[in-house]
Length: 327
Length: 313
Image (spheres, rainbow over the protein chains, first blue to last red):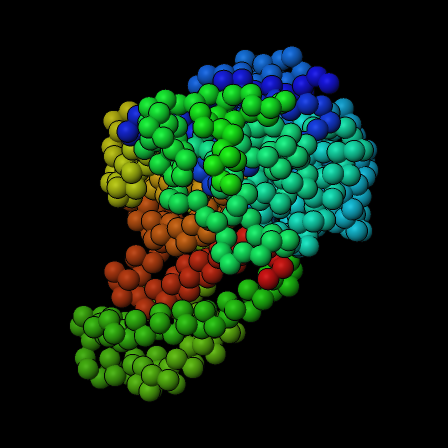
């Protein structure tokens, strides 16, 4: 199976008064066709910046400094602005965390969907676009799509708005959908519906999905592959089953330990001591070492690269796999 | 939408009543006696007393006010106490030129302000932004009368490019257009700065909104992103500001009309106040206030047209 998207050595920096800081620092990832890559991490680990870097939508004063983002053999970072605009929406589409604010309140739902289509298909007639938009609304299971077409975002519930966002994102049949915390702002029941919908649509269209979330449950349910990010770097990646069953990096282990489970009786949930270091005050060596219960002196001096520890399963830790220490 | 407008219209009635009351009371606290003015400097106390009775000025205030409102509702604004010309006749003759001047001022200053503000907001922090903001601070800081005098001195007097006194004719004639340029530049000039600043703030605000990111993620061109998704949303606060600023514009019109001898309501008001012509002054206050109320009504309706959430409320 060939990879649809390959990210190599990606580094995205923000210029601040104290110099440049890297929100994403040397990330390598790949997304196979028709599969879902889950990117997990705490707030501020750089996962959203990573997704915006792929779209080349990192806002000033940020910019992608080095690396490549190859989609179907083309490096998106080398495209002209106009070519990149063609890619956005038609090849790579994106949905965001806040369906409440991600739609423009002053335009109708129908207008915003047809607008996405018109951006990449200038020949279609108005009636044709409208039909296609209503089709798109039907596809994301919005009831009475003909009526919804003329409604404004404030007339819809959060779940409906996220469906509209998905309809809009899929309007031009993209090969890759980047979903940045698509269910975080929604009720639990609605979350499940949206995830079901995404999975069904993926089966229907064969698109790849990058699913960004801090919710391990969502990843376990949706993702084929998982990448765990910490402080701007990928610390562990592999097939979802392998990472969950056999976590190798202490951070992943900590994350999994902090998830409440029905099949276990625990008085307290495990928590990782401390918090994610801000990007302007990163520790030397392994960025996780100040919070790591397994850290040794060597962790303080050298930044560990990703190492292949099992078939397709990599972790960036000199002590990995750390399971042995837990027992 | 229509209901929204009607609702606003009904709300304007008590506002108008308040304007009448305050205008009336203001005239009462001015330490000049209309009867004395009417009678002239050489009149005897008997004559003054007679005129006072004639004008109804010896009645209690509430009777005077009721009578005034009653007459007003019948279209009777009274007559000038200087030359006995009906106030409504004078207002009818001056309201056209004032509307002309307003239109000519807003016609160029609002689009220019919005354009400059959008450019400054989009290119925030760059030289373009700084230049435009400096310009707008300058524009806000220059008093209307000063800008008028400078324009008269250079463009009108030294270089003799354009006429600078009076109105050359209706707006559709060449003379009319030539004569309105300087007053319209003066009056509109003070408007560009505030509109530009407000537009810049509003555009900056909207550009960082999530839905603008969505628009970019769809693959829209920057022009479309700014026009459809930033400017359209930014217009709501800008329109509000314009509505509020029109009040100042009315004040500016009084000064501009005086400086350029423009035969409008503003100049009529100044003349009436200076000569203690009370009915005339009251008439001009009513017209100017009504202008303000109408503008706010238009703003409210535009508000609903721009923002569907207002329509629903």
